Length: 115
Length: 207
Image 1 (spheres, each protein chain N blue to C red):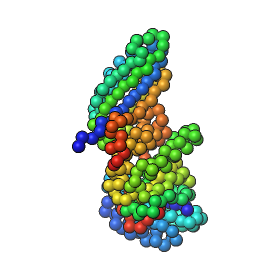
Image 2 (cartoon, each protein chain N blue to C red):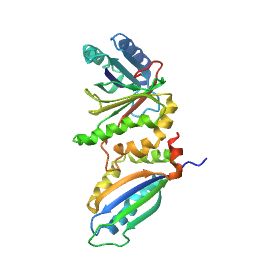
Image 3 (cartoon, rainbow over the protein chains, first blue to last red):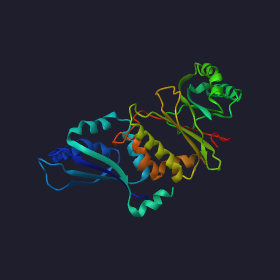
Image 4 (cartoon, rainbow over the protein chains, first blue to last red):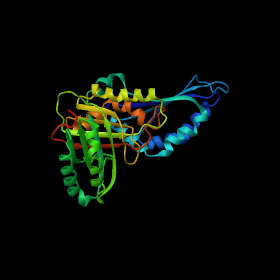
């Protein structure tokens, strides 16, 4: 049986006028390492879809992993690397607020809890 | 109850000798519950021998603490992580065959309400993980070792599969509680490497 896909969702409210720079740096600096840890980039959504120069945007980046075990393997690889936490600190001037959450499709919730 | 945990890194060729030495000591100090056992190789940063002592009163430990400290100065023991702490366990009435201890340090200066939320989420885990048969979350009184450990989270599990499977793989762990440990989240409050250690038991440690 195929295991449910696990989603990792970064939601970032940018500083006014910084959304384009944030997305460019995220894709150039963060995404390659994330792919190396087993994550697959699904979407980078910008809301509203206008590169404001004087207002914040909300950027929602969605990654997928093939299973809960793959999620653990991803985080076990990344956690000992201090550069990862530091990267988020380095881009803090572009970010007003952010969150990271982990999710799964609604149809998979019962199965994920039955382990 | 008052408890003491010690995780011992021991030179490979001396492990049987040190195990016998520490077992002999544990047997004769009036502990209400005790275990001295080799750690499971799947432990992480968890030492080679796990020692747990449970006393009715903290004063009982403090009478023998120096005796144990002297034993743990054995030259074959290269590192000791641990803590002593007060607190009572919760148990389901089912017996476990694996005892696990997690030592962690919450970042100094963390808001007390945040610490309480973190503790509350850890204590919510047994509701979702049916293989956990007993547990106790304690604030460490006397940490020793690599870090000034602030918390000790102990559990008994039905078996090692119950720890490595349901406990690890339930979403309450990877989608909820783990964010406190994840440097990529804004909720992270545990940045230091934790000690995750477990061993087989034949008698209850918590229950």
